[in-house]
Amino acid sequence: MFDFLFQNKNKEMQSMAELITLDLQKLNLSKLAIEKAVMMIARAIAKSDIVIQSDSDQKRKIEYRLNVMPNDHECGTYFWTKAVKELLCAQEVLIIPMNGKYYRASAWQVSNSVLSERIYSNITLECAGESYGLYKTFTSSQVIHLRYDNAKVKFYLQSVVEQYDNTLNAVNYMIRLSSQPKFKLKLGGALSFREKQADGTDKIVTKDMYVAKIKRLLESDDLTVLTESEGVSLENIQLNSNAKAEELAKIALTINNEVANAFDIPEAVFNGNITEKSDATNEFITYAVGPVAEALNDTLTAYIVGENDYSQKNEKVIVWLARFKHVDVVDSAVNLDKLRGIGFNYDEIREMVGYPVLDTEFSKARALTKNYGEEDDKSEIPGT
Image (cartoon, helix red, strand yellow):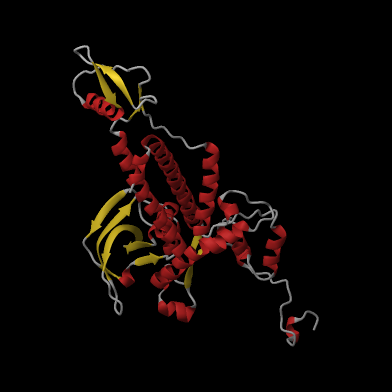
């Protein structure tokens, strides 16, 4: 693979060392950028409330487990950050509900059934840094198996892995080369020269003969003192390489933009260049967070609500992304007042902006102040 190195070892090895150093820097930057993109989406999901649109008496208990304490050892933010992070990186995550609590699986085996429920077995749970193996088997309807297939993310992650492999191969090759000392022998312009022998006579020595002699001396285990003739010098080759900060800064920006595009995150949001008039935050929620939240909505609705209540009562589970974006109640006072006028009650408005609900008769009352009666409905028009 690296035969060209032997054409001019000093120059080519130096160039290769620089390329490897630069590749390692790129890989580190890619790793940091991927981690940042994943955590941005995961934290957005974790910060949002999971709301159950249902009249069931168990609604608040289930919401408590989904949002506050999924199990006895992990809070909701920690649990969903880990779950979404794995969903983005591995394209799937398995959640095991047991005794009204939720646990993430770090390993499992699943059958390949298509027309019937699949069987999950050999499950290992991960909870607060500890692992626990389950001997029980589960069917598809008993687990929450989240899947998220994003071709761009998958392609980018695969390309990074391939780059890791290529760079490691190059590093291993350089290690093998650098483990052997390299020297540069300067013999001047003459094709041959005289060398004094032990008996006092002179011997004509060619360049190749002198190089072979020096090599034997360097490979010898005996203590050897090398002497240099006039016009001859021996230097040890040192391989050092450092990428320039300016070059790395440009590479970092390019990598950041590539990762942002792979995860559908607006570059302005990813690089922190949002202006007051920018709509990048809404685009981040719509294109990067929204599809992941929709995968959670569908899977959680299927498990928690079920087909009958969904179709007959219009019940569902949703990740309420409205809570993710910060709302300044002072700046939004006029718009919030309009919501009150079209029928939202006081508790609903307070919940939208992250305030605790009052849960009083006054706060639950609706004050419809706008006239939205039908045109031919005289009873809806004041004074008729």
